Length: 220
Image 1 (cartoon, rainbow, N blue to C red):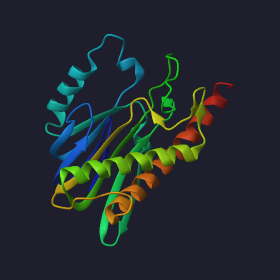
Image 2 (image 1 turned 90 degrees about the horizontal axis):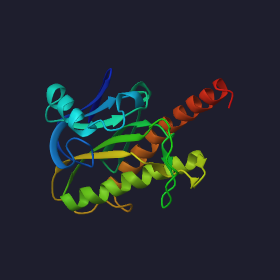
Image 3 (image 1 turned 120 degrees about the vertical axis):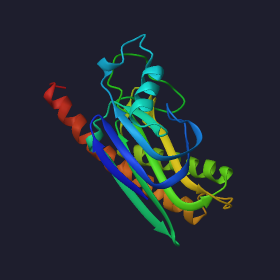
Image 4 (image 1 turned 135 degrees about the vertical axis):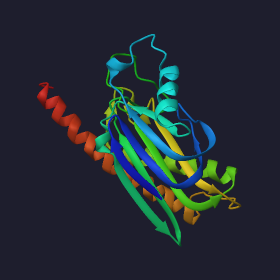
C-alpha cells in the first residue's frame, strides 16, 4: 500500500492510489484526498524564532509536492521504520520516523528550553473502506499504538514517562467506504494498531541507540 523513497531532505510515502487521508499535518490537514505523504527534514537552525514556518513549508510543498500531505521533523529521515499487519484479510502498513528528545508526559508540559525537536511522524494506510467516523476512530487506535510503543521504551523526563512528543503528527489513509467501526475489537483496528506499534517500536529503538551514543560522546 505504501512505497517509500528517500530523497533528502524529503522522505516520500507514495500511496497505491489516491486515498482519503486524515491528519493534523502542517500541510493538508483534515480529510484530504491525496496519493503522497511526505516528510521534510529540517534542523533547528533552519527555523529561527520569528520565522514563518507555515508559509515557508506551504511554499516548499507547493513547489515540490503539490497536493501531498506534508510533515516536518528534525529526526534523521534515513532512520524511518516500517510495520505491517494483516488480520482476517484486512491489511495495514505504517511508516514512521521517531525522535523523543522533544518528549512530553501527557497532562504536564516540560519547562521550555533549547532542545532538539525530534518528533514522531507516522503515516499508516489500510485497505479497509471506512466511513469518515470510522477513519477518525482508526486514527485514535494509531495514536494508542504510538503511545503504547513509546511507554514501552521506559524513556522518562522530569515530568514523568514520555507518552509522545510535543510535535507528533499522524496521518491515516484509507479508501472511502461504508465500514462504520474501526475500534480495538475489529480486524482493521487490530491491524492498524499492530502495524503502528511495530514501526514506532523499531524507530524508538533506533532513537535510543542514537541518544545513548550522543550522551556518551558529550560526556553525559
